[in-house]
Length: 321
Image 1 (cartoon, one colour):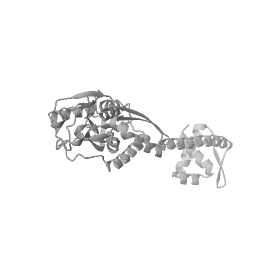
Image 2: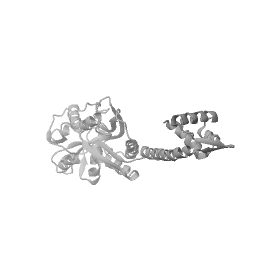
Image 3: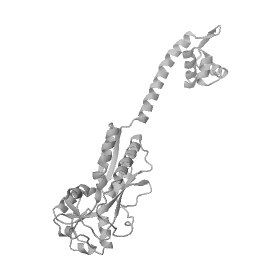
Image 4: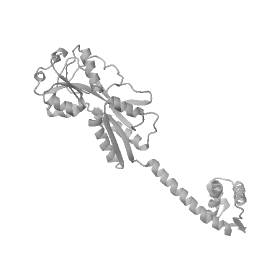
């Protein structure tokens, strides 16, 4: 039985008039009559009869109308529910962040998202830039924010959303903090505390030593930003870290930034997601909130005391390892 014919029949029965139904349905009365006749042929029932200028439902028509009432009430309920689902901001976002944005930036974004859309929950995975890139590439994450300069697979959408810089930090007890402007050579005897070898920060440390013509002098590899900060604060060595990661410690005087001549490395944060993966409305809203929060953060970028860069341009783009 054709649902379209039932819809036409239902309108005529509801309004008690072929003329009224044709106006509402934007169909001519002759065309409406032809299609109702086809419905009567399909069902083998006479659905209407006329008395004077009025149209009435037959006994069979009344039975069919009872069913179409239920059918179209259900259709209306379905349309409302589906519409509600389309506009619903909720569910779970599988979110990724490399170490610095995952720890120091994304929590701000998640907090703002939860304030606006309390029905949203998050699975936040924090790892090195290379691992986050792989998880985005294979579709495991809805959205991610990665730090540093890195090339990605062609299936990954990449957009810089915030710019940071790297800082060389030391313990307040390190004698170098009292010497003012340093040359790269002043760091020759310093032991560096670096992130694990698969990290973007380790790659940046290697690049710095090459450009500054320093031999590598690694005191320890540590697997987390917080562990590195604690080791530096304990005067176990110095480290190269993103400013957002050490902003609070610098402001509180727990760590000191060393001012090294011509040391300047930009450290961008990028929004990344898989181009082939369909984004839910919730994920789209998260991206909107991410842009807003990062725009606010960008108005007060923690550039600190460095006045010039180690090189006139940013470090070359590197491939994730």
